[in-house]
Image 1: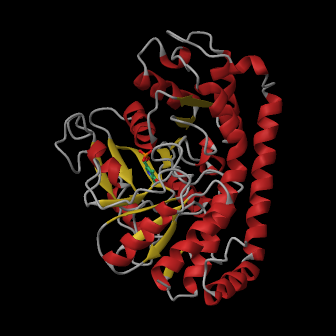
Image 2 (image 1 turned 135 degrees about the vertical axis):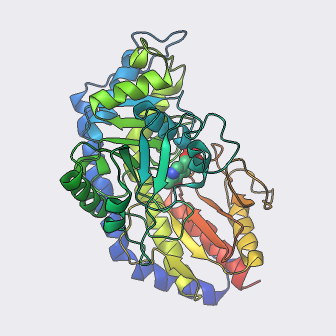
Length: 417
Ligand SMILES: *Cc1c(COP(=O)(O)O)cnc(C)c1O
C-alpha cells in the first residue's frame, strides 16, 4: 500500500506537481547543508574531538574537557573568540537574557532595531509582566525602532533613537511570531556596517533563534559581537534535551559567563551531567536536520499555494530560518490544521491540542507538538497565538519525509474532509 493511498487522487496529483516544482529549491538547501556540514566537521577535526570528551562531569564540573571542546567547536563554527554552551542555559530566552544582562549595566540603554522583540523577551525587558527582575527594575533603558511599512529596518530611525546611553543594539534574525520578514545574513551585514560606521563602539547583539545553519554564513561572520540561541532549536540537531548557547567576543563572553554562574567562577565550572555527548552529536547532525526542516517548509508553502493559502516565505523565496507562516484566516481552520499535524506526529498522536494560555505570551496559543523533546522546534510543530488573521507557524521536521506526510494529511483534513 502506498503512503498516499488514503489521499484523494486530486490531492495526490497536486502533491506530485509540487514535488517536481520544488526540486531546484530543495537542491539549494542541500548545498547549504553541505557547506555547513563541512564547517562543522572541520571544527570537530581541528579541536581533536575524541571519545573521552563524552565523559560526564558532576558536582562543580571543574576541568570538564568535553565542555571545553564543545565550546571551542561552537566558537569555531560561529567564527567567534569564545562560546558558552550549557545545559544551565535553560532556553533561548534565558540565553538571550543572560547575554543582555551580562553586558548591560544600570544606566545603559538597549535598542532593538528590528521592531518588537519575540514575545517572551518583553517580560525580560519589563515591557510586559510585573517587572520583577526585569531591565526596568535594574534601570536599564529599553527602546525599539519600528520596522518600515515594507518590513525593512529604518536606518534614519536608528539615528533618531541612539543616545550616548545606548550600549547595545539588538537584531532579531527570525520573524518569531511577527508578520515581518526574517532578516537574511546579507541584511544583517548591512545593519552591522551602518552601525559600525556611525557608532564604532556599539555592542551589536543578535538573537539567532531559528536561524542557525539556514544559510552558509552566520551573523557573527558579518561582525555581530554577541549572539545567542537555543539548543532545542536548530543547533541541537533535534537530539539535545535542553540547553542554550552564547557566542561572541572574548570580553563579552566573560561578562555573560559571570552572569550565568558567579564572578570568580565564570566558564570554569558547571557540571554537564549527561549532556555533552548529545550536544556534540546534535551539533554534528544540525546542518542536515535544519536543511531537512527547511525543505519541508518549502513543500508546505508550495502545497498550500495550490489551495490559495498564503504563506511566507513563499516556496521559492530565499530563507534564513525555519519558520513557515501560514495565514489560515479563520480560527477554526487554524485549529483544525494544527490538530491534524498533531495527529501525524510520532509522539502523542492520539491527543488533540486546544488553545490555551502560555506563560510569556500575550494571547492564547495553540500548539501541535508531538515531539520527542518538549517544546523542541527543530521537530515538526505547528503553533501560533490566536489572534487575527490566525497565522499558524509551521516549523521544523527532523526528516523531510515526516513533514511531507504530516502536511499532506493535514491538507487532506482541512480541504477534503
Ligand atoms: C524561540 C525564540 C526565542 C525564545 O526561545 P525559547 O527557547 O522559546 O525561550 C527568542 N527569539 C526568537 C526569534 C525565537 O524564535
